[in-house]
Image (cartoon, rainbow, N blue to C red; front, side):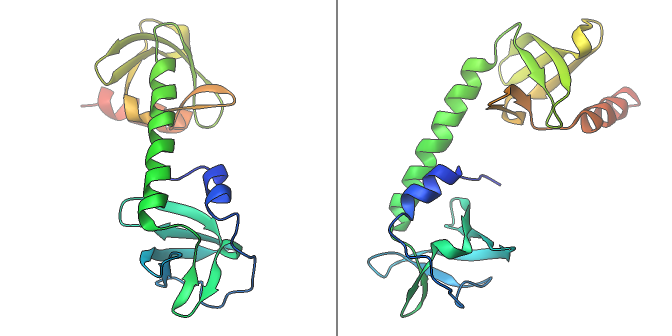
Length: 170
């Protein structure tokens, strides 16, 4: 599932009044400023929603929707929203790819040190677990992201250990 950063959601919906909106429910069709369909709400939980545009699934606060004649509304069209998310995803991928270099330290999703990158082979990233060059793990490029804490694998250490054990037993 691809999610947009909260900053884009705030920018997109800055002009939307925060109203109690009983029409923000799972399955509701969301329209834009021209009355055209933007997407469908596929999840509502704890004041948060996931809006599916057909191209992206975007988390938005339930209070970010306005009230329209046909149900919930937002202040942008589907094309505008998808374009903003596409740009954000491209920027994130470029930042990630620039960080995936030999020697870069990698941490796990649960903030444990995984080790340094020892090789980048096409879309496969080879890491020396714990700095041990004889204990390597290879993960696909799409399993990585960057954060305020640096380069991060989108797996916990337990998931990596479990997957390594499964590969070793084959």
